[in-house]
Length: 132
Image (cartoon, rainbow, N blue to C red; front, side):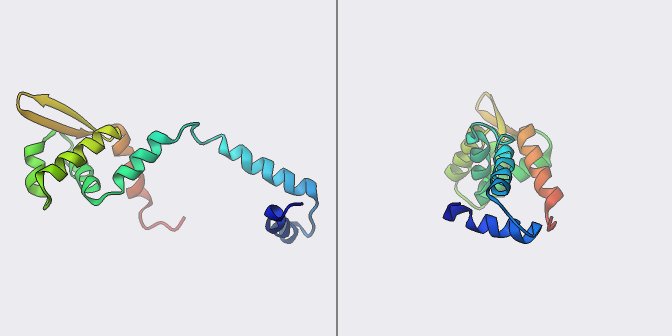
């Protein structure tokens, strides 16, 4: 067996009282099968998570989600102590990540959370403080 699987072999030995190469291969095959549950291209998921990883963007999504309605950008700007351009950039990133929708009505732009953003926030809320 390779040095990459030495620790795995020790784990299986400890769990089962013994280990052979077939045991290691069976465990690896099982673990590899779990990879098929991940999307083939995780780019959209990773982008959404990275986008929420910024405090301003995260707080904007929380505000929009709590509002439970379309919110004009002119309502968002005064709530946060960041520049108008930072708000504009954050909203653009959130839109690009599929976490908010936007609608233009004359000179006004309205934003609202998407189902994806709502589901991510719900998952965070449900698991907050849970160890497992």
